[in-house]
Length: 479
Image (cartoon, rainbow, N blue to C red; front, side, top):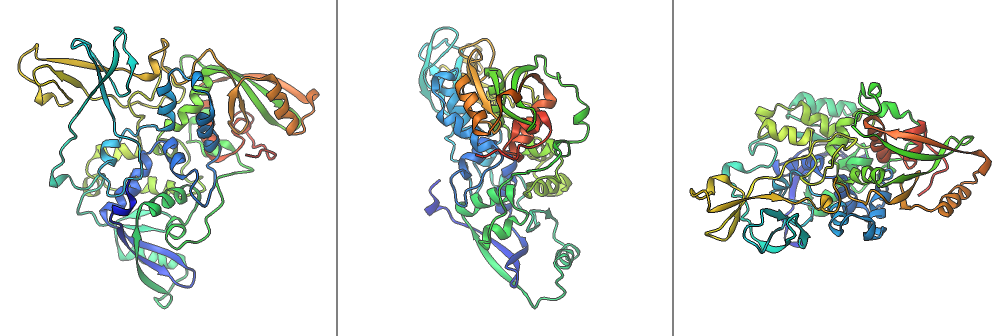
């Protein structure tokens, strides 16, 4: 996005001058849409956008996962495209987010390629993919973007919507009662220390707000008044069970059809996992965390346990009347239960997250063009060809995934992933002053419950394996 040519969004805020704190703000529809869009964004996109932006801070082990993908040899992935997919995961709500006034996701728009043979029934979003018929898919096609009419303005909320938002991202209908409640919570009884300020929001502010929503309870203050941010997500002592939605602990560990088997090297006295030895299926699961939308993670966690305030945003959307404030119930579901983008899922995914479907695509012979709107199809039966989208993560093996399943990997407690190496594993234990006689190798199975625990642990801790499998953090873990 060309930041210099994007007109900022104006936000009217009531500020406590003495504390330099935003009390609440009256945002425009454009700002609310940007804020709501955070829940649709894949975790990998979020990490990519905030990874190196000051002030630098980590989100559990997610930073490590992303950097591992950057550093791993492309030969370990099924295809070169699989590595690109993980570094630039797509948003299932991309069509909506592309219409945001400030769209911070710079992922390239979808591309469309066909084979040179007119009877090849496959389409690819990546160049040079080999289709099952042996055809090289490399002929670029153009697909016209959808046209939106004036009444479609507004992305997730209705154009005429009026809402107010608190410092901790509670979005609510405007009312004197709510305003007085926010003032009372701060001990303010009159307006002697408050003032109205107009705040300009550009791309930089949106990126900072995204980060603050994950790590701070005062996101608006931390973004617009340049106050010191809350430290990164890093819980040293907690019960992982309290982070997971009620009822999840009662699930059996083999909800998926084929639970993943891994071997944990455990230091018994320190109650810590040194590393795991595993094949590609477990690494696929870990890497898939970067393709998961933020809203899915919030949905699956106890929403009062986040160190940031993204949970308040999520709960606010859940409580809003869709008919009155949102464009539709479908838009509300898009925010509260976001799906994986098409092609980003795989069979027997332990998380069980739903994957969005590709739209129908057709090649029209007479006009030599690609369309995705069935109403534009010619009347003749032989004038067009229905196309099937090729998934780049299934082109080299029978099952879908990102890395080669036969490869062996080592995964450290803080989710740094490298090709398997006994020397590296023992060196890692030595770094943590582990007595080799204190080592125990345990075989564990990863199904739905364990996958969810791992996802949560990777977001809130730097010792994800220890937290997920032993139930407590490793106080000695470091980045």
